[in-house]
Amino acid sequence: MAGTPYGIADAERDLRASLGRAPAGAVAGAWSATTLQAGHAQISGGYTDAGGRHLDPEPRHAFDAVGAAVERLAAAGGAAFNRVEIRWTRAPFPLSLLGQPGRIRVETAFDPAIVPRGPEDPAYEAAAAARRRFWDGRGRLLSGFAAQDPVANIHGQTKWFGPHRRVLLLHPAGGSAGGVVLATDGLSTPWAGIPDPENGVACEIALRLPEGEGEETERVGRWTNILMSLGDRVADGYRVARDVEKHGAILFSRLPAACAPFEFVILAAAADDAVIRDLPFGSVPLLEAVPLTAAEVAGGDPDEAWEASTARAALARRDRSAPL
Image (cartoon, rainbow, N blue to C red; front, side):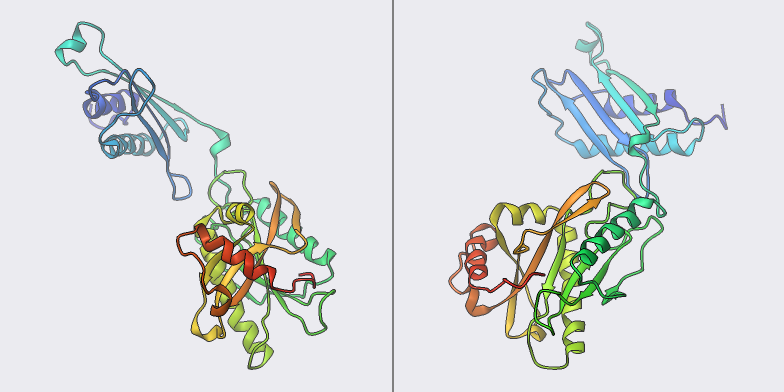
């Protein structure tokens, strides 16, 4: 009847038309989907054979059909749900031999474990407070930020996928009197808009301000921008901290001409293996970004993952005895 809200029976009907005739050899089909939450939705699954192997030749077709049904169910209102489970089973014998479409079953549920963190979630400031304690405990944090990006979308996401995208300015207590360290502040903030129990990309990065021409203020500004860009790449790479742990050091990025004589930067664990503790989901390592000249990476093997041997050799020649 016109005006009747779209319901489970309607979704099963539509999905039976799209998914009812499975690929040859399929004995089961299952898809799991979430509703659109904080601008993000997920769909996984497919048809499987008797050995449990996926064999759908066009999974995108199935995902599009599932997504359309989920979207219509969500738009219809009614009882709240954020997860949809779809199951396909073959039509019973002998209808299966006659090409009868299989059966589709749709179930909705509300799963509180997948509700995304909102923009006011206390986990964000808890992470920031843990980082402040880390640096205050080492006697080095100056007030304010060398740079910060307050522009986040309505879900609290910056380029680092959380609300914090900032760089701190520090004077190392154990280093030279004029030493300056820059450090990212936000890569370890938990994800905004999704529920995963992770401290962002699970690291923060510090960089000792290199000696060079020009006033310190000018060099701080230049390398602050570099560190923000490195943070963007780490956020996009997601598991960079794991790669650093695996290889010891990695040749991570080229540097712009303004950073001459330095042309590359490597990432490595802090010399004292410093760890930022008491974040909402545990601890993360502090990584160090170390600028290198072209001569320091000459002769490297471009086919080696991250040119790790070259990065480790260059790092071994550096004096990192002064703590970050």
